[in-house]
Image 1 (cartoon, rainbow, N blue to C red):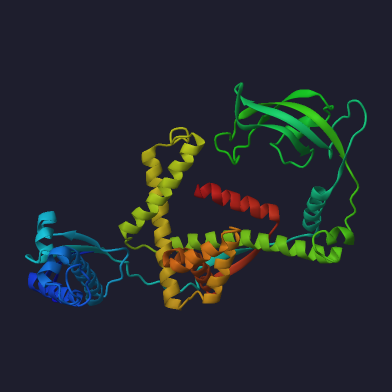
Image 2 (cartoon, helix red, strand yellow):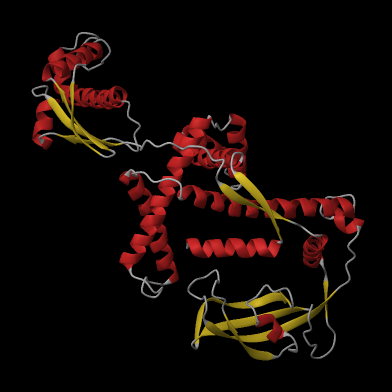
Amino acid sequence: MAMQVTETSAQGLKRDFKVVVPAADLAAKLESQLADMKAKVRINGFRPGKVPTAHIRRLYGKSIMGEVVQEAVNEANRKIVEDNKLRLAGEPKLDIVGGQAEMEQVLEARGDLAFTVAVETLPAFDVGEFTDVAVEKIVVDVPESDVDEAIQRMADQQRAYDDKEGDAPVVAKGDKATIDFVGKIDGEAFEGGSGEGIDLVIGSKSFIPGFEEQIEGMAKGESRTVSVTFPENYAAPRLAGKAAAFDVTVKNVAAPGELAIDDEFAKKFGFETLDAYRAAVRSSIEADMARGARIHTKRALLDALDGRYSFELPQGLVEQEFDGIWRSVTSEQTAAGKSFESEGTTEEKAREEYRKIAERRVRLGLVLAEVGEKAGVKVEEDEMSRALVERIRAFPGQEQALWDYYRKNPEALGEIRAPLFEEKVIDHILSQAKVTERHVTRDELMKMNEDSDAMAA
């Protein structure tokens, strides 16, 4: 199909084009489609192949011309990209010249199809080498005491408890107290702050700091008001940092029974010997620590890369990233009952800060994509299959439906492929960078990542 494509504007990463497809070409394409349809269409009152073309045009003309117009638009977009060797940052934006009235003329094959195409391209930049990039790689040492502690926690979960005898047995450290409680803030009970028949092992640190210590020494049947303060980093933001009072009643007290940590204990977890179980526990801890260390190393590398590159960003990608961040931020605020003012800022300042985060993410995403393309980084099919199986396993009972969904939706598969690709690019860069190892403890790693999360928040 003949068409005239003219570039009308080029500013930075933005390019505008005007496309004109002559009415005669559209009409010729329409006639071809009608002739093809005539041989196939079945209409009551007419023999196959004998339906008058004019009748088919009256019934289906506009619908067919709509398909012809869409084909012309797709062809124009391909031509613009190929002839100008463009790398698009997003989908082209189309605008019909003349609006609805002009479009009606086009659909009736009585007017030229004229439209504008606005595109935004990816920036061109040199990724360079990474031999001068200095990155600290965290290595976590796992002492035997960490393995002992993990096994002891598992043992405590398996431990049997025997009710204490006597008229009013007292709660001691290590005992399991069964309690009822009602939590209040400023005298008002709050959602999620009440419970009945809750088992609490004293010393397990499973409740708010300071709570368990005040239960210790209570007798069965005794009631007491326990005063605590929620941690500043508490999981529920609406409660973080707030003082609360809990009216607690001890319903029962049970003492821990004996539990030997030996080969028989290991068999409860599917291992023949305690040594085999210890090895598995160590391996699990080391894998968990390696994931945490990887987070720190990756952040350090991304910080280094962010300072190396400065180029114009496709604003469409920035807006898309910012919109996603902003929806998440405002949704969390609504759920927590907070506002920008309560967090010591304003919406204007918050938008400015989150836009910077969006720009950083887009910049680093473009850098990693360019590095990966230049290095020929690929995600193999077996890697995709393993990742897909792992994702599907998280939804037991829905495996087949999810498998079909991902196989039929390339965009959904792309969401699985993207992080795999990114990790492989990170490894490629680290293989060239100056990497120095730093050995830390588990607690040091957790503190490092908490600090990094706080700075990113």
